[in-house]
Amino acid sequence: MAGLRLRPHATAPTLTTVAEVVEWFGAMQAQDLASGMWSLGVRLPGSTHADVHAALERREALRTWPMRGTIHLVPARDARWLLELTGVRALAGAAKRREFLGLSEAEADRAVDVLGAALAGGGRLTRTECVATLVAAGIDGAGQRGYHLLWYAAQRGVTCIAPNIGTEQTFALLDEWAPDQHQLDRDEALAALALRYFRSHGPTTRQDFAGWTGLTAADAKRGIAAAGDDLTTVVVDGAEAVLHTPLLDAPRTEVDDVLALPGFDEYLLGYKDRTLMLDPEHKQAIIPGGNGVFQATVVVGGRVVGTWKRSLAKTRVTFTVHPLADLGPARREQIEQTLNRYADFLALPPRITWSQ
Image (cartoon, rainbow, N blue to C red; front, side, top):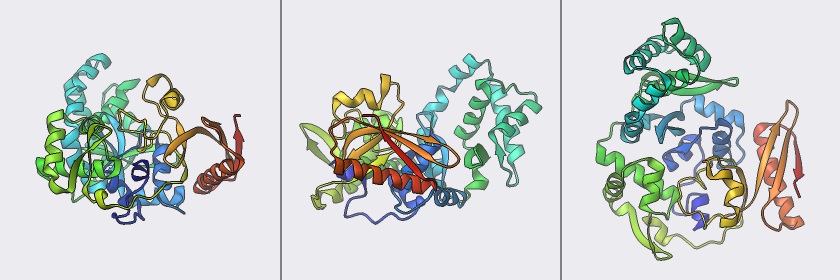
């Protein structure tokens, strides 16, 4: 089962592009851009950071806030229906946040209009330029107000996050950056999201699907039903779980991959119970304090066996690996090879140290 969550199963097509990887998942958390880029890179062998960036410039995927108020990579042409399906609950809670920030609904709506006008005609502004545009229009963008207003404009489906220019986040109009949006009715959208979630994360529970998407329990159940024969309910360790139906006939192959996954990778996100991938005694090392911040992990045969950190310099990337299990010399060499793969992705020579 852990192997099924690591990669598309044998009955699925081989994924060779950023667009295909993101569509397979439906959405990939990318609040931390570096993690999101490597989540793509690790699934596209031989790719580089420049390759992934170029694919995002080609608009194979884009970043926005479709679920849980968190930035995700989504298929570019699916951004609007995802926002309409899963973003509505985040918008419902925006009033409370505005009150805390001292913003009125009228100010927020005017900010959306100001940004829409500034970006019209193919414009693209950095985050700093967007906030400066709001301030010039007499809208207070100090502190967290600017971030909230940028979020609000994207949550409303007016803007989206375009690829960085240098180290700066940029914004564009969604309808101009990704025209010809797919139009799905509600049941079609629920079915599509359920299928994509369970084929990439399953077998897992309906409750996990609701938690990952931010949908209500009723909508989660409705989405699974709308997916029809593409999904099947099974029993795993005495609990109901849902899986992509072709998995029933997939070959049972042993997994011995050695992977260096980024923090916030979908392999560990979206589950209430992670014992399949992670020993409970190691949970604190992966999610310190249980505050939702995930550390980068070393995964061997589907199981987390360590964490790693990177330190970037202009001429080198330094990795520090912290084992959580006994790792012999041969296994350590495999782990170093997979970290070297990430160094190649960044086009920097590596230096690897072990914390013990």
